[in-house]
Image (cartoon, rainbow, N blue to C red):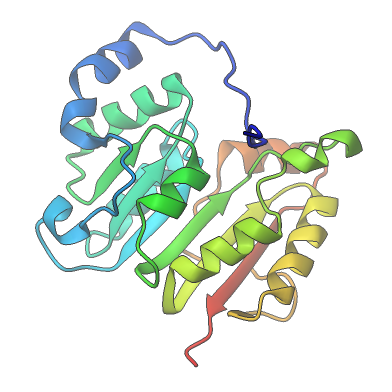
Length: 223
């Protein structure tokens, strides 16, 4: 069996004491274990509401801010790195975010097996690793198979929002999304940063390095 190429590397970053406590004590409350079965959002959140999936929530600042600003929408974040998961767990607890849960697992497997087709109101992918060296491009998350999978999970009218500060990757993503028949561009080319996405630390860093930040906003066609 061929081992799948991962779009991430599990780095040995330091997990703080607070983050480890969150992993030990809060994941059972706010986290979901990976399962090959689709999640039932109504059972998970106790209501019927639009569901948005975020892939790669990092340290969770943006994720928590978006969830806090949109209490009528439910969010599931996916992240593999322990410090980031612990940090977001602490934010959920501190801010009492009843509309946010997270999964510590490979995002492609979560999207494929835990998210039902035509169920998402939105999918966020903010600043995925650009894997800038050409020999590493095969590790990039946004590839044709991923785009087709993401489009299939969106409900009609649901949106896919990608942001990156790597121009060449942005152009590649734009081409891939434009080629997917289930999707249509909500802008003429790149989009203005939507109000729902706050500035991230990665964006500030990219701007400081002179990297233009590109937002891409596509929607699933309604017919």
